[in-house]
Length: 316
Image (cartoon, rainbow, N blue to C red; front, side, top):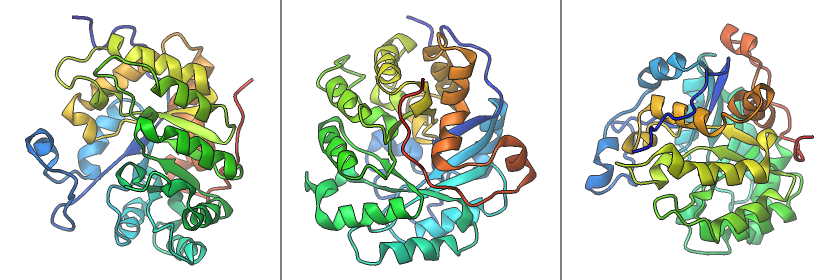
C-alpha cells in the first residue's frame, strides 16, 4: 500500500485552515448525523478539541463553517470567534430566498463577533430543486451577499456543478467558493464528468476552490495519497494555487483520517509547487478571499472588518 504521507514537505508558516466545524449536541442536534457510518461524529466537537491539532501543524487562523440551516447557529458561531483567538472568520447561514437578506447580514455584523462574518453558505447539495441556485429569489439573496462584501460557499454534488457555473456567470461581482472540490468520486477513481464540470466553473474568474474533503470522498479505510492526487492535480490545473485554499473539514474528516493525515496529504499533493505557490494554497488565498487579518494581527487578537471578496483571475 502506498504511504498516506508520500511526498510530504515541511509545513508552511502561518497556515490557515479555511474549513472546519464545531457543534454542541446539547445546544442543537445535527440531524444529518444518521446511521452507523456517521456514528463517530455523534458527539460534541469544540474549539478546544481542535486547537491542539491545528496548532501542531502551524495553523494560526481558521474559518469556522456552518453545518445546519437554522438562523440561531450563525450568531453562536460568531460569538465563538469574538475573542480574537484561532477563528479568524465565520461562514454562516441565512435564508437567501427571503426578502431582507441585506438587513439580516447587517444585523449579523452588529452582533458579538460580527466583524468576523466573511461568507454565507447554504446546503445546495440537499436542495430537491435542481434550479435552486438560478431562481430569482436565490439570485436576489446572493446579490445581497456580494453587496455586503462577503463570499458565498458552495457545498454541492458533482451533478450540480453546471448550475454553479451558470450562477457564477450571472453574478460576476460575487466570489463563489467551491467546498471539497465539488465532492468528486474519489472512491470509484472516475474523473469524468466531474473534471469537465469543474473546469467549466474554474474558467470563471470569480470562483475559488477549497482543497478539502477529499479523504471522505475516498475509501475511508484504505485511501492513499495516490488515490487523491488525480483530483488534486485537476483542481490545481483548473484553478491554480492563487484560487485554491486548504481546509481540513474537521471533524468530518475524522471518518477517514486524522487531522495530521489530512494536513500531510495536502502537503503531499502540493509538494511540486514552489514555496510561494504553497503559501497561497495554505494561507494566502484564504486571507485574500475571506479578508482575513495577517498573522501578526490575528495572533494579537485584532481584526479589521473584512473587505469585499473581489473576483480574482488566475494567478500570473
